[in-house]
Image (cartoon, rainbow, N blue to C red; front, side):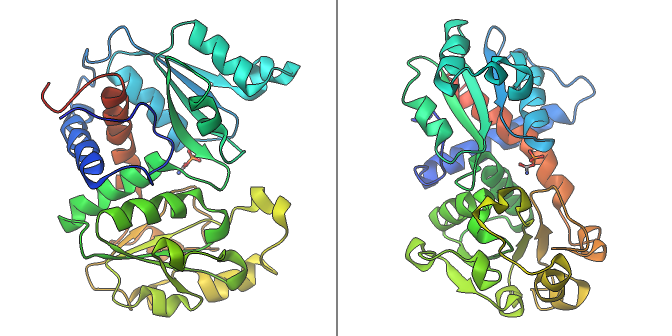
Length: 311
Ligand code: CP
């Protein structure tokens, strides 16, 4: 089976078959990352450009590793050290990169919709959204799904509680779409100021009481407060008050199923949305998420540049 999409902008347009193909392909690439010599020639001759207009540790590094482990030429461009600082537009920057015959542009941008805007203006390059404003973070969602599936064997029928700053979380939105497509129940929880209208219409169950959201969940996914997006106004009085009512701790975690897993996309704000006891506890799979991020990004680079599950 080959992959029908040229770009990865949103999980909303991915079918169950698309997600199954990505996760199966990622699972086969994961083995490469566990070898002594982590290198295969699969993407030799391909060029991947990481164009990051926002800070990143996990996403940028894992895309770079994914490309390099598959022998692609991988170049990182930070907006601050590029001609963006001289006033060049996003479209001009991307068209110049495409003119150098890049195959894939991986882009993180603070503006929602920026990767989609580029995807409509480039003729040859594939675009991968590495996080756009408060809109979507599709590759984070796919690595989350891979991690859940490894632990639970399936996504169908699971209850996933996603708790925190839902309004400004691109991870919550991408996971809501993808988990619903795969047959999971998605609970979104947080203070009412962090719950935008319209979530029920998208298929979510919505909670302001995190104990109710955690109860009998198979997966508890905590989100960071997006203070860097405070431009839209302050959504909580103090971090201390937030932690009192909305942090995951050993007590409220007992409400989840005994075999529930604890997830977080990172970076963690310990003591705010999650206590260190839980973040480092035996139910946490946070670093497994990071490990799977490399495999999922290898799979996406492979599928977008013409690979299929027959090769
Ligand atoms: N989860 C995530 O996107 O982390 P980074 O911001 O470090 O890439």
